[in-house]
Length: 141
Image 1 (spheres, rainbow, N blue to C red):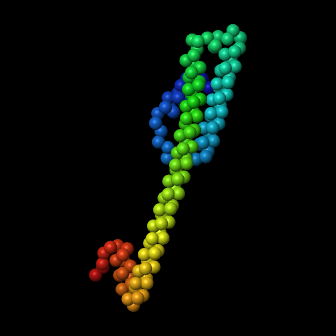
Image 2: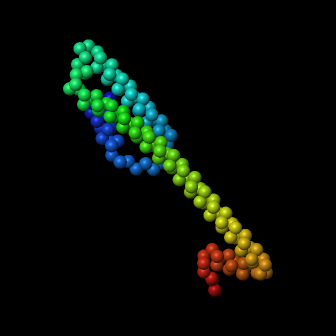
Image 3: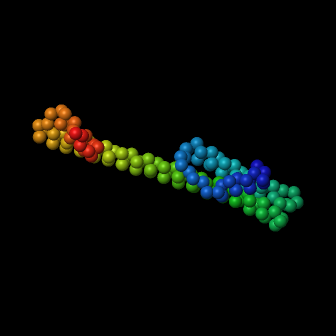
């Protein structure tokens, strides 16, 4: 990975990203990238200790900081992705719960209407009118 591509990764990941749907495959790929970035950092440190130790010179601090920042950016992105994945799961659960509550409410309402129609001894046409009135809120004439 070149210095230029590291800078590009940092720039891409510093822009706000709207995360909608997160798949485990994406999380796993980011974790692998994080390991790769750690390997790049260790490789840089190993190279800095080689030979005349030119890379240990302070004039290369910005380059080393770029490697550190790219690794940290990937770690932050993993955190954001995991958080969004958890939030998406919670949203689905809430939506399912609301849908279930709505269905139960509708069934209870229909049950009560059926009992009312039975107690009023309504024929099928009048039962349909009663149910339509409560479903649509308007009376057909």
